[in-house]
Amino acid sequence: MRLAKPAELRFYLCGFNFYCVWTQLRLKQGMRILAFLVLGFGIALAGGGVYYVSEYLKQQSVGNVRPDMVRVLAARKALARGDLLDAENLKWTGWPSGSVPEGAYTSTAALFGTGGDDQQRYVTRSFEPGELILEGKITKPGGPPPFSFILGPDMRAVSLRIDAVSGVSGFISAGDQVDIQLIHTIDGGLVSTVILQDIEVLAIDQRADTQGVSPRLGRTATVAVTTKQAQLLALARQTGRLSLLLRGIDASADANAAPVPAEELDGLLRSPEKPMKTIKVNRPGGSELVPIE
Image (cartoon, rainbow, N blue to C red; front, side, top):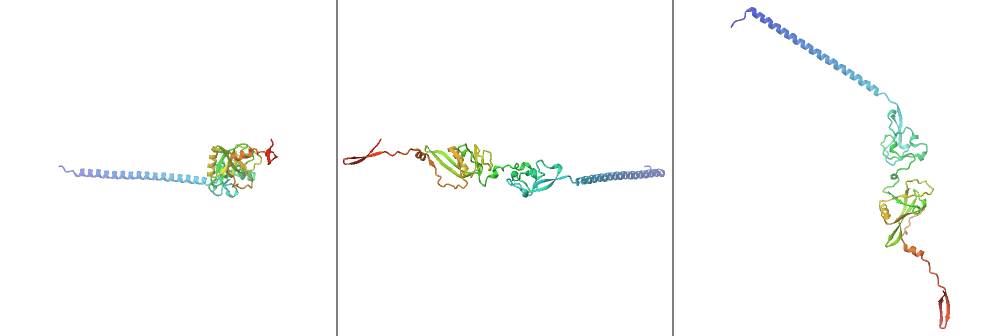
């Protein structure tokens, strides 16, 4: 094996030193490039943050601008179906003018008109406190409340077919009290029975106006009855013919309203026997009455 000469060793050492210096320079250059990349990324990130913060603040400043407001009517308290609308259960509330719902009211004149009590309105769908009053959830101005509002607790509405005779020539109107009579057959003979007394009339046809004074013929009468009375009427309609008997204002219930059979009518219609004319004839041994034809 040949040993390197001193000159060759010096050459190799110089080459190795140059390689080491060159390597260190490349490492420093790479670190410098990496530092520039990190710096550039940080500047870009900071710039994006500044941009988004400025946009957010701009939006917040626009959102704080108060839009034009109008007054609309709202429920002061919870309103249930059937409640009457009045000043006590209504209040004014502010609402953006550009988003007022259709059917909302911006004046009491639009809600109640100028007719006073004639324009009263009822709730048909419940309202929560603060909820806007909408046209679709209340009755028409001055219109009667729905029938279900009129009925008392545990009462039912039943309609009966009537005509000029069974409806007392149109003199029965909503609000009157009537008795209901049934003409039916028992054992082959006709019987008249008052099956219900002191029954309230709710409407004649579709008219529930209690202020009417002129007689008007109707085809149906709607009355308020209990569930059992409604069942009796349903059976009575299939059994015979019903008619209404108009009661006086101060009429009391007739506990003696017993069924009247046709025999009683026959007794009234049968002609009474005429008294037979006679003459007294005296004969030997006594006297006797002799009919005169």
